Length: 169
Image (cartoon, rainbow, N blue to C red; front, side, top):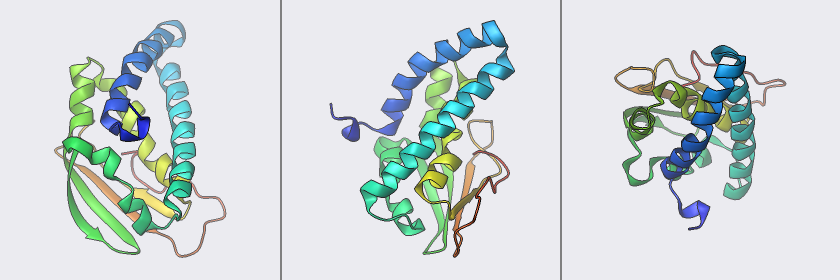
């Protein structure tokens, strides 16, 4: 199967089945906090690279293009979303069902879902365009009833873009 035809949920399942035991083994050796910090750092770097590659494939890096690129993440009902606002400057939605969270729980590693999946959200958008900012305050993965994604587009590129959100969502 071509990886581009595979849903992101299927890819995350395969990754979790390998990375979950690796992170847990590192946690036993170097401590849980340090192992998670290292995993988080690696995942963020990968997501930023994937964001840059996605922008290149899409041929643009504006917010409207970013919103159109989200189909692989929602494919086969992986995410059920309620779009609140979508225009050139804002893309706001709530995730009302997250099969990623369900999958990590089913695999017996719900504590790793926020690192292996949610932790990519901000980094992917920053890789796609440093002008795209994500703010989120809660996730289903962390026990909330829904995830809140609030993307905005800065008109001017930031000289050194950093996190502009409450959580990594």
